[in-house]
Image 1 (tube, rainbow, N blue to C red):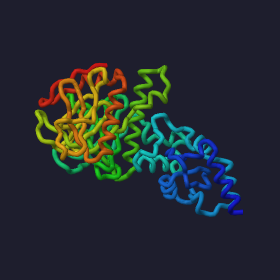
Image 2: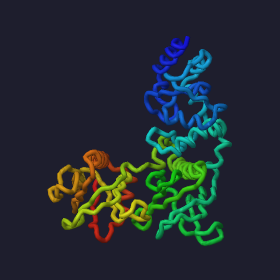
Image 3: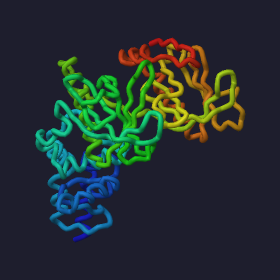
Image 4: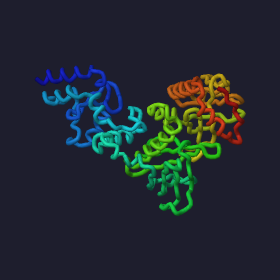
Length: 382
């Protein structure tokens, strides 16, 4: 009987939708929730266990024993039916996480879906759909490495996020940020904070980075979602004829690539190790990865504008690791990675950006960036 049940279970994996994890989409799931009726990857299975057996009972497809009743549940439901039920009222701005997303997004997605049942009723989404939101975030200081309590306010009517140095809104705001200009990226590894969030926006022609976290993972994810919700609302007003899913596609975007590279200075000056971030078409480098502003920032245009990347770097000495060159109008950037794999990944990422045609939003960002004094102005062509 046990072999028969396992054979029935394995046959279910061939059904479209069941061959990937119901939560993150990872291929070839090896686990399942026998009462919810879904197939899961190992990572999401662990998060389901955290819900408790009264909500989700997790079993290994191949190693655990399965009785007929549990197999019948899996046959009756499966990933597609379960997701249609449990994601019925998922708002467009609430992006379903993927296998590449940080743990915090997967954890809160699963808790929202099954514990808090936020997608069963829109009234359970008020933590991130209200017109205003206020709260305390721990913010990294601009001139020091300490995290301090700061009052943050999100206002949809004003299309702003405001923060104060004190816990009340009666004091003068420290900064007012237009929501249209904000990008949000969870960076727990970079910040060494499990709930770490990086907020970026343009300030006087340069990218400003704000690093925040909360002790409660739900709290910081609610802020993330509230900003995405506000940005989508603005887009729906501006483009009433556009499909909501299309408008929500790039509300926030993760960095394409981040990591350490060595960079040769102007006039063949010695290589210096820098933290690099490729954010859409902006390539930024920092002396420290948590600096509030980049030391250098360049817009990566289209190949028709004389942008390219090559593996060769004649000026680089053999001791400089795996060197490559980013060619830009007015200057070549000679960079070096510590491994061949890192070099290949950077070249691939940069080439993909260079081959992508510019959008009107790209053109706007290029016009807003102000070159640093030690960098020549780079013309931008479509």
